[in-house]
Length: 390
Image (cartoon, rainbow, N blue to C red):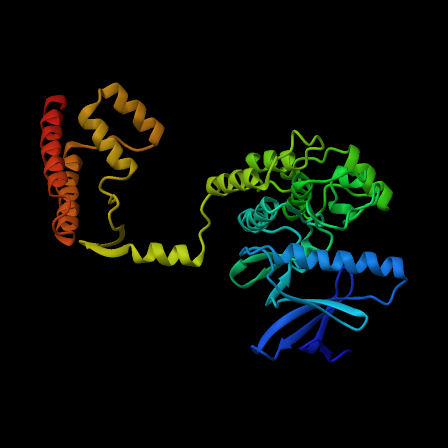
């Protein structure tokens, strides 16, 4: 292993990148850890020129981007036959490794990751940069679930000097768009298709286009319509089926036209999901719960909420008995499977309800005085009505 690249002191080898070895290194000038991506330029002259040009294109493309969801490029250089790019060292894991361990992630977690990737892509597209190789191994999940896109090595910029030759296919077959498969010129919608493939895989545990070889995968990409993700994962809501289908549309005009549109739909879908009961939410709920002693009963009362004197089937029956006809009360009793209350029970409940409100009023000085008065007046009226009915 080499020990020095320019001014950078190589610490260890991190692995093989798309075009060369990736190292962990240290910048002695500011004592900062960096990741250094390299390519070996000891190739035939024509290949060397193409690879070196594409390598510097990556540095130029990614170096123009400053976004929380895109890896930051610090420096570019060359030592002998090795060209390198120094970028931020990310403490985290590739999304590919996460998926290998957990084939199917919770829907809310999937949406969180995909939204962040889409936000980064949207920013890149606004700067006329197409990634062209969106896949789990080019997404890093760092601390607190933050996500960063890496490896713009085969990105195409509108102003780039290096142009992809007609018919030349770049990318990873399982994640390529139909236009990439056909070797056509691509735009931001190609990245959206690849993101749709990644979203499908995260929801179902497998990519939508499967084949025994590259040609079979490409055929599927061009011709097959994958089943909705919810077929494999019942937790996937119908709205997310729609988002996946739109991202994977083979017709460019039917696909999301930009990543921002997809972000908006993904956020709306996330907002529609049931709120998960995690530790933090439980702790928050616990902070709103006080213990109230009522005689020999010890009940949990939610602050600012309704006590059991108001919010129960029995309370509903009491209200019905005081306001509805006998026939309606009997029907409701059958529906709720609750016996019709007696006048004694109604009279006992009314003071209890007033006591709970009075206690809440005492605990919340300056709040709810008008509300308490209205409730007491309402209960007097209801008492008069009950006397007329019975």
